[in-house]
Image (cartoon, rainbow, N blue to C red; front, side):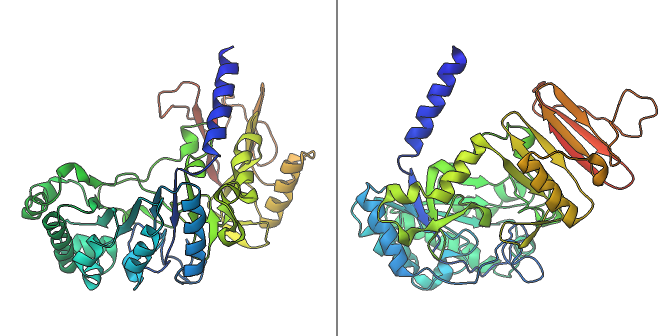
Length: 424
C-alpha cells in the first residue's frame, strides 16, 4: 500500500515538473578571461578537455526567440550566465539584460561574474540595467592566493571592483541583490578577521557571503592541487544514492547553450546531455519536452544508464572520450566492467546492453553482477572470487559512508588494476 502511494506521488510530481521549467537561462558567451585552477575551462592539451566547442557569443535572434516563448508561457526568472565563461567578457551584456527585461513576464534576471571586468561597463550602468541578482565568484584571501586560484594577476582590480559596486549598490538603495561566492583557502579566519571583510560588510549582509566547499573534478580534469588549500572533491553521488534517481537539474531549468542547443544541465558542458535547438520550437512546452532530453529523463527510470570514469571509450558518434570503468545499470541491478583494450570494451558493452551471453574468459576484466539474489565477483580469468578463502589474493573492504547499512562498498585490487564497486 505504501509503495503504491509512493509510486503515485512520484508519478504526479514528475508530471507537474514536466509541465514547464521553474526557470530558464541562456549561455550568452563561452569565453572567459580567467584561468581558474578549479574550473575545466581551457584545460587539456588543446584547451578543450571540458568544452569541445568553438568560442562565440550568442546570436540575438536565438535569444529573442527563446525570450518570446518563455514570456508567452508565463516567464519567471531568466539567467544569462555562461556555463564556462565570463558574462562581462561580452561587450554588450548589459544590452542583453535590457533586452530580457523588455518582456513583461520576465520579472527577474540573474548572473554570475568573476568581477574582473565590471569596471569597464560602469557600476551604475550595471546596477540600473534591470539586473536583479548578481553572484560574484572570487577569492579574497590575498594576492598570491587569488593568482594561484584564478590564474590571473588581477587581485587589486577585483578587490576594488567589489568594494565599489557594493558601495554604489547601497547608495542606489540596493537595486541588485549581490552575493559573494568565495573560493578561499582554509582556515577561513584569515579572511573573516581581515580589514577587507570589515569593509565589505558595511555594504552587504554577512549571510550573503558564502564559501564553496563542494568541488567537482570535471571528470578527472581537475586535480586536488587545483582546489583551495584544505578542500576536497565531493564524493561520487552513486556511492550515496540509488542510481535510478535522476538529477533535479533535468526538471528544474530550461538551459540553452550559446548556439541555442538545449542542455539538460547548467553546471558544466556535457555533450551527452545535448538536446535539440531552441530555434526549432514554437512553444516553451515543446522545448521543455524535447525528445532527446525526455529520453535522458526516462532512461533514469527505464535503463540502461551508463556512467564512465577515467581511460578511453567510444561514443555513439564514433568519437572517443576518456574513461576507465563503465557502469551499466538497470532497475533490478547493475554491472561494473573493466576491460583490457578499446575493442574489447566496445564489444563487451554491446553484449551487455543487448543481453547476449558473455564468456568471461574472452576478456581481461573483473565483473560484478547484481541481479536479484545473484551477486558474484569474477577475477580477470573468469574465476569466482571467494573472500572467505584464506588463499584469496583479493582484499575486501566493506563500509558505509553515510551510515546506511544497506549500502556497502567493496574494493578489489590485483597486480594489474584496481577499482571499486558498490552493492545494494
